[in-house]
Length: 163
Length: 137
Image 1 (cartoon, each protein chain N blue to C red):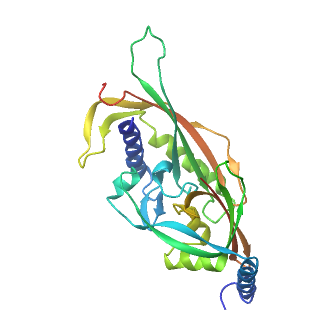
Image 2 (cartoon, one colour):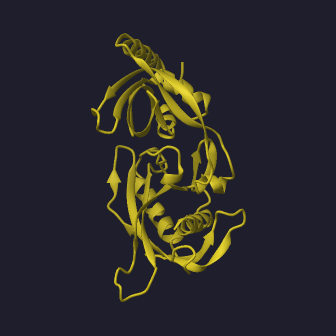
Image 3 (cartoon, rainbow over the protein chains, first blue to last red):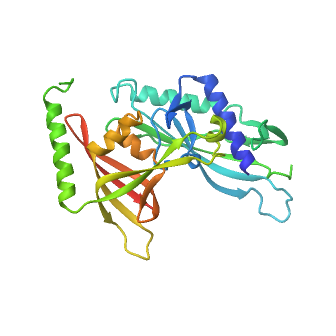
């Protein structure tokens, strides 16, 4: 499953750099593309604004029927993001959030990519695909300066060594 | 004098006052763990494939209040002085104390590592003079 998670992240990260190279985040003094995986970062409540934060959820076999022989699995993903607009909370928060919505939808299309093994120095193909549903955008949440949202999707994959 | 004019002085004065009050109530010291050295490549860090090296930074005076009683999992409310935290943040080139705390690995207290799950800053005259931190196992 780790290869599927790594593949999904690296694919979206690469697409984000193409869609909006200015969408970056500084973590521990290092400038990175503005998409982070919460479980891979040191600070658990650190969700920087103007960036996408991915959280992996429940993983389940897609078929639980003994009549269907499939090892296909799914894992839920939540994207959290928030923005204060271009002027620290002034009137264009909504426009900034809409831009982030569009970027998220953009990087999630096309909804498939070849599954790769990123545990090696040179990523190697694993012979199957990782594919996913279009993100479902949740209701916007507002604080004094920030407008944010979470979006969810489901990623499908075959476990390593089985396809 | 900075862009806040003389009001910045009120912020600093309040910061010092807070520190004195925290000391007077028998404050202790907590240890904040922060990533010290970047290890591996950026891709490895993004994928969580590296073992970070952490610096153990003592911060005080701090007031620590237990939110739970054993055997429940430890959950603490920690009150930290803004002056001390902001100094640490500035030394590392971090924008403010809130970011410095939220991006930390956690708080080490009496040998237990607790995750920082919430940080709230009190602000006066543009200065964060006090931090309320929630940390739990």
